[in-house]
Length: 239
Image 1 (cartoon, rainbow, N blue to C red):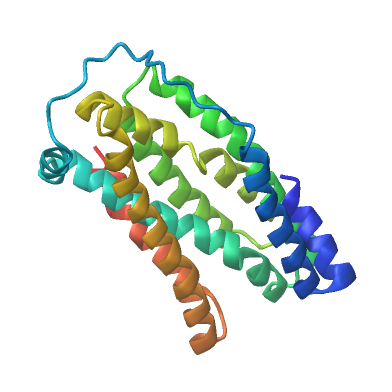
Image 2: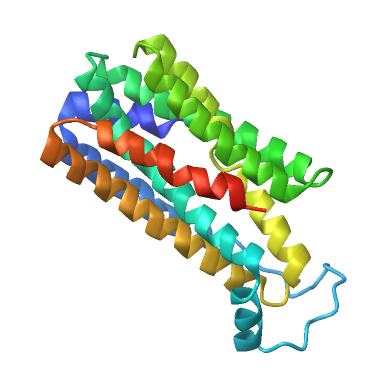
């Protein structure tokens, strides 16, 4: 919420190279801020450790239909979200929208992301996590379609950003809950890591695909279509 407008201001005032150096310094500060953190050796989960070895747990997960679908859905998730964060500002400039709107949109995504993640965490404790996941993927796609169908303006962009932000990382507590409930916590970090690796691979392809499409076609029409198509199977099969 804070860094996107700061980044835009740095670009406007000092150029993109200076902005990159400033953001590198901010990223480096994370290491310093992590030094005072102390981990506790106590275990409060109350769960009896599983006797499964890591390889056996991975084999079991890879044979689980729901786990595979969830991993596929996370690929589509990363594909959509990183395309938007990478290429939305450039797309808005093509549409004649002021550059500051793109930064404000990213800031709104950050703000509503915090709200949405917390809300879906609460909802996941009361309702079906797999159904909530499917709903998030479906709603994202519908909001993308609505955004492209309406005239692109500053107002429509900010509404779109708020809606997408609310749905942004709401998948994280739901996926965490499903993995913990189905497979337990003994090998949770590895099993979640595999799913999140799929997300990051999708993120790579979303950013790369958008740039490739723009270089070849001079617009983002095909790229937006890919965002809509790729989310359709996950929204149906994430359960």
